[in-house]
Length: 177
Image 1 (cartoon, helix red, strand yellow):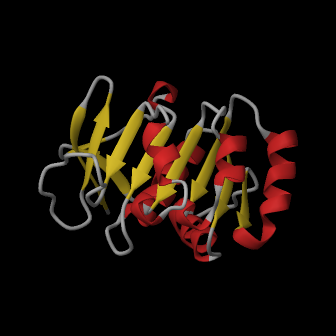
Image 2 (image 1 turned 180 degrees about the vertical axis):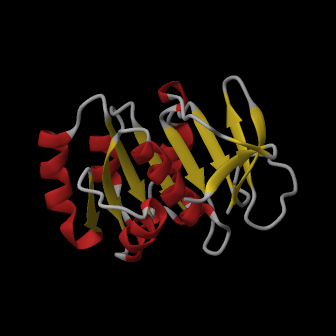
């Protein structure tokens, strides 16, 4: 599993107090792989993962990251949004992380349902999202920017690096083998 680094140091343990998380990045920025690795890290800490994504490649990458059976992770693509919504009603508890990846492909009905969930990760190109204004106004405890987002100031970043801003911390994150 790839390591998540924060200012060059490995993140050993993820903290539920860092949730909900918004990860923004345009295609090719590293935000997508970072999202999958973050979900894999939560999974390694014993959390169940409920994943809605635009493309099936997310599940394939997750399988590579966890390198084991992942019966505690369920994946739904955009075509299976209704199944994802049904799973939300049945499968979400305090040890479940809900991940919505490729948020630019979804509209307000998904955001309305997942917004009340504390253990939430929303990821994608917010600048391309139909619900950009809602996402920018929503209170996320942690925000990670792999590329500039209108209305947010971030420092110049190296490729595949993200700027992390939370209530207690700002810094730079990246993945490492």
